[in-house]
Amino acid sequence: MSQPSLLEMPENVMLKITEAVGFPSIFTLRKTCHDYRNFIDDKTPNINLTGIIIYVHPQRIYWCYEISGDKEFILYNNHPDGCVFEHKSHEIFLRNEDFILLFLRDFELIIKHQKSTLEQFHFNSGCLTNEEEFHHFISPILDKTMKILKSRSCPLKVKGFTMSAFRQEHVMSILPFLDANLLKSISMEHTDYEAFENNETVMKLNEIMELPQWRNATNLEIMHLYVTEPVENFFGFAKVAIWKKSVTGNDFLSVKEKFLSPNNQTEEFIIFYEVFFDCQILGDCITDDCGDQHWYYRTENKEKLLTSFKNNLQKSLLYHLLGDRMFRRMQLCWLSRVSSYRNIFMLLFLFITCEILIITHEA
Image 1 (cartoon, one colour):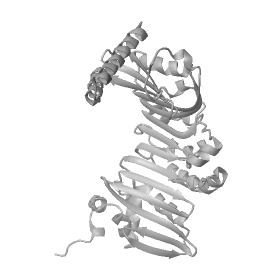
Image 2 (image 1 turned 120 degrees about the vertical axis):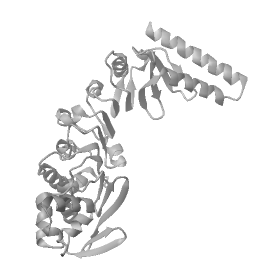
Image 3 (image 1 turned 180 degrees about the vertical axis):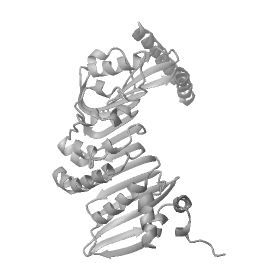
Image 4 (image 1 turned 180 degrees about the horizontal axis):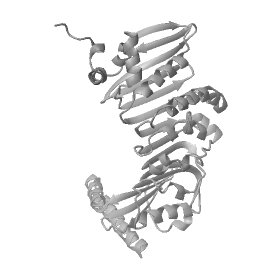
């Protein structure tokens, strides 16, 4: 008795075999015959990617896909007569093919078949310091990306989302179409640091902050983009890193009070700034050899300390909850590194000063 062909098998068996083949072989099989192509397009077998990283450049697009820790790279390279496609050391020249359109077709097919959860989804771009020129280049790509994501029957399942952007509309082309119940971290960064420095770019967040993805995420990072919202608007996250043009002593105290509140869930809060106003209202602190300032506060949980650190070189404020045992271990570690009795006495004096400050702040 002859063995049945793949197309003669029950659909559930065909689907399991097809999914077991995995990506990118599924799309190779898709090209073998018309009936099998229809089956794949109709049943949309899951390709089980665990990570997607896209890097868009005016002359090329890199795409990295990850399956259970193994990474592979695809390159769509612009060519005067078409496009050069590279994958696994194989290079194919496609005459009269636009590299952006080719990428978008492949991306649409992949997103259609991605049903499992992505640990990370990164959409990166850059290499144009002129923001207006870059906006005109990236907008059509993001418009098509939004349509692809919007066409899915359910939101794309992602845990960590990272995007290089400098306008709210860039982020809004992707973020609203990610599963708000699964998304844990949101990261945004300017496409070009030099452009950020030249333009002091401000990122509007009014629309983004209304999204359930924003409200449900636990980690937020906005780098090389100034935000104008009050620091209180970022208190819903467990870990935060933001850039502000200026901060005040009241901002510092507001974050401190958030950490010391009974129901606080925030673990780390970092603010990078350009100008600091009203620093004198912050109270007594420990100043180290570099001129950086440290504050320590006892929390409601007696086993944890709130440490606040003002780095004058990097112009940043760091708030971090530190376990009391960890704090003692740090003290022992510092003691083990000093090389003379004089330094030991100085360090012990520092520890005593720290304890006095904690008691003073409690009072």
